[in-house]
Amino acid sequence: MLLKKYILTTGAAALVLSSLSLPNAASAQKIPSLKDTFKKDFGIGTAMNNAQIDERDPATTAFIASQFNMATPENIMKSALIHPKWDTYNFEMADKLIVFGKKHNIKINGHTLIWHSQLPSFIRGIKNADSIRTFFTDHIKTVAGRYDGKVLSWDVVNEALNEDGTMRKSVFLQYLGDDFVTEAFRLAQQAAPKTELYYNDYNNEQPAKRAGCMALIKKIKAAGVRIDGVGIQGHWHVGKVPFKDIEESILQYAALGVKVMFTELDIEVLPRNFQGADVGQRMTANAQSNPYPEALPDSVQNQLAADYENLFRLFLKHKDKVTRVTFWGVNDADSWLNNWPIRGRTSYPLLFDRKNQPKPAFEKVIALKN
Ligand code: XIL
Image 1 (cartoon, protein in one colour):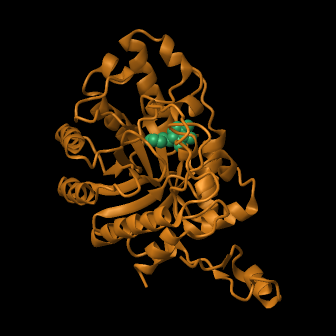
Image 2 (cartoon, protein in one colour):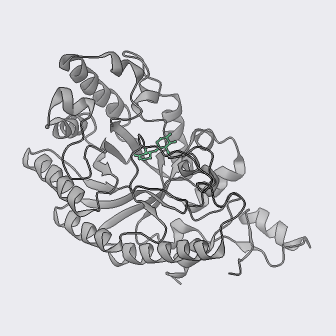
Image 3 (cartoon, helix red, strand yellow):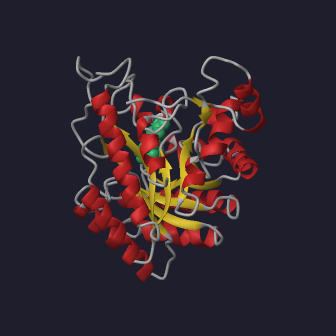
C-alpha cells in the first residue's frame, strides 16, 4: 500500500517548510485531523501518559492538540497514584492535565474512581468493612469533588463485572456487597453534580457481560441515581472485531437512555490466547510471541485498516448514540500493548505509527468522510 507523506508541523511552520526545497517537502502535506473530520459526529479522544501531560515534547503537544478534542489520563487519576496513602492525595499531575485540557481545548474524562486494580497499597492491609467504606466514601467525595466543573466526566466504576455478567470478586464487592456500584454513583452524583457519570468495562459488548452491564445500569437508575453513559473499552484483536455484538450493544445500551462511548480503543495484532483486557492476566513469552519486531507485514496492516474502517463505519451509522471514540494512546509506541500481557513486545494497535505518521488504517477512517 502506497503511503502518503505528511509533514508534522502546522500553520506558519508548514508554509515555511513547503517553500523550502527540502527532499520530501514538495510531496508532503498536512495530516488531516481526526477531531475535525468527525467534529459533527462524536468526540475523538486519546489516553495521555505522564510525559504528554507534562508537555515534555512540544511537537507531541501540538500533535495531540491537532488530532484530539477529548483525553483520558492513562494512569494518573487511578487511586494508587492520586491517593497513595490513607490521608494523602497527590493532585499534581491531575491538576496539570486540567490545565492542558483548558489550554488546548480538550475535554477530560476522569479515569477512574472505583476500580479493583491499581489500588493504593494500604488497601491490602485493610480487613474490615468500615475502613473500606471510609476509603470508598472519602476517595469519591474528595477526588470527584475537586474536579467537578473541571472534567467533563468520570468513569465512576471500572470493570465491576465478570465475563458471565456476574459481579467480579473485588475488595469492594467483598466488603460492601452488590450495591457498591450504585453507592459509588450516588456519592459521585453528590460530589460532582456538574459532571457526567459513566460505567466502563471491557468485553461488555459480549452478550453475557452486556446483560450484566445492562442490569447494573437499570439498578442504578431504579435507585433514583444518575448514570449518564456506558463505556465499552474496545480492546479488540485484528481480524476478530465483534462487529455484530458491538452494533447490538450500541442499540441496547442506548435504549436504556445512556450515552454510548468507545473509551479505550486499540486493535491488537500480536498473538494472545484470550480476549479482553483483564490487566491481572499475563502470558509467558515464547519464540512466537513477538513476531514483528521491525515492521508490520502488509497483510496484517491491511486487515487492521479494514477493521478500523468497518468500526468507524459502524460508529458513524450510530452517531446519534455514540458520543465519543477514545484511542488508548496517541501512537503505537505509547500503547500499553507493547507491555501487556507480555513485556517488551512491538505492537501496532493504533492509527499513528511510532513517528506519528498516519497508518493505512488512518487513511481508511478519514476517507469515510470524504
Ligand atoms: C492500563 C494502562 O494503559 C497501563 O499503563 C497500566 O500499567 C495498566 O492499565 N483497562 C483500563 C485501563 O481501564 O485503565 C488500563 O490501562 C487498560 C485496561
